[in-house]
Length: 138
Image 1 (cartoon, rainbow, N blue to C red):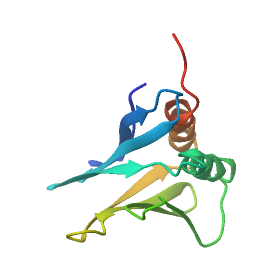
Image 2: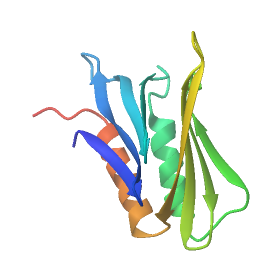
Image 3: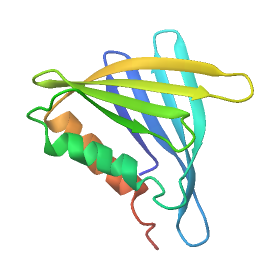
């Protein structure tokens, strides 16, 4: 698996282009968002202590609590260039995905996806765990 795509109604979030070091640790990945007339992407560096385990756990926790939670759940990358805010809407989950470069030119882009709280959310959690889990030797 090279990438994970979460999409709804022409809007998408793609996570892929994972770069690993010689020991299999993740060094970076690329996040892309798209909506009608908008396409933005950014390379996101891994936090060397957790790599992207916190992103995997974020989606796993959303999937575990598919029946609902109060308020917003937020994932933010170490440098703040990638942020997801999740809200429960009954049988659906709203994901507001923000990308941006804080230096030097400070740009921001945002899309809002609505995903099924059942199978679509489960598939995203499983696929992210497979993409960002330990490197496999073949």
